[in-house]
Each structure stands twice: as C-alpha cells, then as structure tokens.
Image (cartoon, rainbow over all chains, first blue to last red; front, side, top):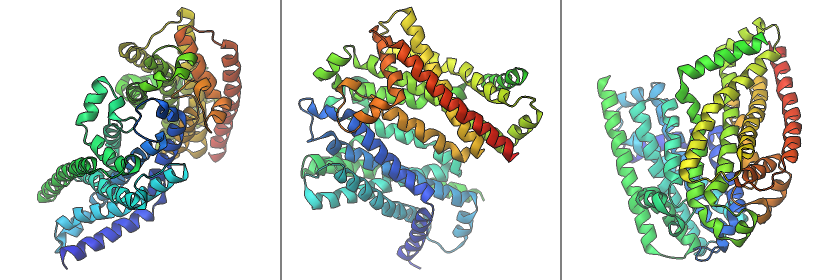
Amino acid sequence: MTLLTQTSVLAWRSIKRTFQQPAALVPSLLFPLLFMAVTTAGAGRIAEVPSFPARSYLDFYVAGALVQGTLFGGINAGTALAVDIEEGFMRRLLLTPLVRPAVLVAAGAGAMVVGAVQGTVMLVGGVIGGARVQTGVAGGVVVIGLAMLVALAFSSLGAFVATWTGSSESTQIFFPFFFVMMIFSSYFMPRSFLVGWFKTIATYNPATYIIEAIRSPITTGWSFRPIAYGLLAIAGICVVGFGGAARALRTRFARS
Amino acid sequence: MDVTKAVVYRNMRAFAARPVANVIPMVFPLMFFATFAGGFSRLSDLPAFEQAFGSNYVTFQFAFVWLQASAFQGMFSGFGIARDYESGFARRMMLAAPNRYGILSGYLVGTLMRSMLGAAIVFSVGRLAGARFAGGIVDTVLLVSSGFMLTALASLWSAGVALRFRSIQAGPLMQMPIFIVIFLSPVFLPLAAMTGWIKQPARINPFTVFIEEARNFLTGRDARGFLLFVVAMATLAVLSTWAVRGLRSAERAG
C-alpha cells in the first residue's frame, strides 16, 4: 500500500467518525454562527465609524467566524487522535506495515474535509445574513480553500497536543489557549482600530494574518499580500504542529 | 439549617483545598474584558454612545464583565452538583439529609461565599484597567450586590439542570442559555444606541435591566433600583421554582 492509499483509508475513517458524531460537529457550526449573529447585531454600528475598512461589520466578521469554526474542528481532530492513543488503536496500527507519516497526514486530510464543510456553512450563513463577497463566487471558492488550510493548521496543533499528552481530556483543555490566540488578533476589529498592548499582541499573532487572508477576498477584493502572509502563517503553524506531533509520536511509541 | 451548613462547609473545604479552581470561571470574562475593551473601544466615537453613556469604554465594558463573571460563577455550581451525582456522593447526601431543600440552599450559599474571591479579582482588574467608579458607596454596594444576585440566579438555573440530568454531560445545557441571555443584551452599546433585530430581544431581556443599572451605578447616574429589584425578585421566584422541581425530579429518580 502506498502512502497515498494508506492516508486515504485513514482519512476516510477520520471523516466518517466526525460525521457519525453530530454532538462533536454541530457545536463547531452552531456556536460560531450564533456568536456571529449576536456580535454583528450588537456591535454592527462600528461600521459607522469613519475609516472602518468594510461595507458592513458582518462582511468584516465572517472571516473570524470561519476561523473559529475551524478551530473547533482542529481540536476535535486532535481529540480523536488522542482517543486512538488512549484506546490502543494507535499502538496496533503502528504494528502494521504502515508508513508512519500517514497517521498525521490522514488526520490533517480529514480535518481539511471538515474545514471545507465548516467554511461553506459559515460563508453561506454570512451571505444569508446579508454579507457580500466582493470577489464573487471565485472569491468564495478561495475563502473555502483557505478555510481548509486553516483547518489543516489547527489540526496540526491538535495533533501535537494529542501525541504529546496522549489524553483526550488534556487535548480539550488546550482549547481555551487556542481560543485566546484567535481572539487576541484582528478577529473582532481591524488592526488600524486596535491600540496599545492589544495591537502589539495582534501584530505578532499568526492568527491575525490568517484571518486577514480570509477577510481580504470578502471585504477588499483581490489582493495578493494578505493572502501570502496568511499562507506563510499557516505553513509556519503546520511545521510547528506536525513537526512536534511526529517527534512526540516517535518518542511515545519508542518507549513501548 | 444543619444540612445547609454541612453542604456549605464541604463547599468551603473544597475551595480552601483548591482556591485556584475558583479562578477558572473568571478566565473567559476577563479575556472578553481585554478583547472588548481593547477591540471595541472605537464604538465610543459614535455620538449615540456619548449621549447614552458618557464615560469611557472600559467602564462601560466593566459592567458587562462583572455580571458575566458573576453568572459564570453561578453556572459552575451546577457542574459541581452534576459531578457529585456522577461520583455517587449526591445520592448518599439525599439519603442522609433530613431536609433536602437544605442541600440546594447549601450549594447556593457555598457558591455565593466562593464568588467573593472572584469579585475581588474582577474589581481589582477593572480598577487597574481604568474603569471609573464614579458612583458613591451606595452605588458600589448595589453594583456588587447585583452581581451576587446574578450568581444566585445562574446557580439556581444550573442546579435545576444538574438535578434533572444528574450528569456533567448536561454542561452545555447549563452554559448555552446563560450565554445566549447575556449576549442578547446591550453588550457593546447602550440600549438607546442599539439598532437592528437585536434591539427587540434586548428590550425584554431581564439581563438588560441588570447591565443597564450596573452601568448607572458605575457612572453615578440615576439608577432605577426599584425596577432592578422587581426584575431580580421575579426571576428569583421563577428560577427557585425551577431548581426545587429539579430537586424533586432527583428525589423521584432515587
């Protein structure tokens, strides 16, 4: 079996497991949509402030909701991997002639498919609520593609935590840290509206560039630079996440 | 009374053993404080905000953060009840207690006592962040009291859920309604400055009275203390009934 075949089999297992547990998937769709609805309704008048860089606050906010949804998905992917470790499935899997990177690649591939669903739901939800994508259908496709890559990045972090701790409960405890990383960025407001220490944190936070990459086709039009920065941030997170996960996996199963 | 005291004593022993665990309900509200006060401060540039509120945005958001933290403190007491059921302790307590209402009141009083640490943290952080307490001593006491009232209300809600389901898996059912009620209110702008679909639910939401009056207590403006009292008492009556019926449901389940 080639790496591609092994990855597809494991990725399909991961995708099936996600959709067979609506209790895990539904909150990652409902909660960001709910939060988007109340936040954009409550703070929508921010778009009246001069120099606000979008047609409406909803247009601005959709990118943040999308990233929030993929964050949930990333943690769920990590938790699923941790459950496989806890239940001994991972140990049995590694006894087979499996190419080891297939485990992590499959987790990422599965997360990307879920990310596509989440991205579509958030974008369609935003459009139904009145958001307008400046770049049209092509821009919408790019946004969903970026959502898939963001899901890959967050799943790499989830995989890192899962392989390092080997515990599904510990993996879920990390969710607040990732949530903090996401909101201390240009999630709620453009960087030009932020001040002081908050702006400093947002400037060095990779989540800022990811959110701005997704936001750009929605609010601004075709612009290469924010998308390039976002892709760089995603690549950086993937290197850290998957690199750390691969090392943790080697260490964990070298001991046994 | 003896049952209440015993439950309170157990609560306080658990608190003394792990005081840091009581800081956890503060984490999300303080995070939102940093984000909203830092991120949404430009909303204070709107003329409608200046007319309706008139003080700085940090002070405006402090009211929301204090009440949100208070509600979260109450919500966590429901988690405690659910965990006690899952461990089997709650059933033993129900068998042993001559008066089971004492169990409910014990959890409630214990939560209120523990929430004083949370209050100290939130007020200290608010002061450091620049929130202005322009009201007098009476306004500040009323501000603190309204938070504790909200803790009690959230505690009764989550206790009712926990007693009915007797499992920590009912956690989202304790959290989500509180979260929805909190956010369907004047979180980002005063009620008078709100527009759109959210204004209608905000006008009839009892939490709106709490948050608007908390802001009046902070700025020293004319507060409608009587209205707050009436809304609080009415909500207390409803949620007490909810919690007591939950207790009876737990009794029937054995």
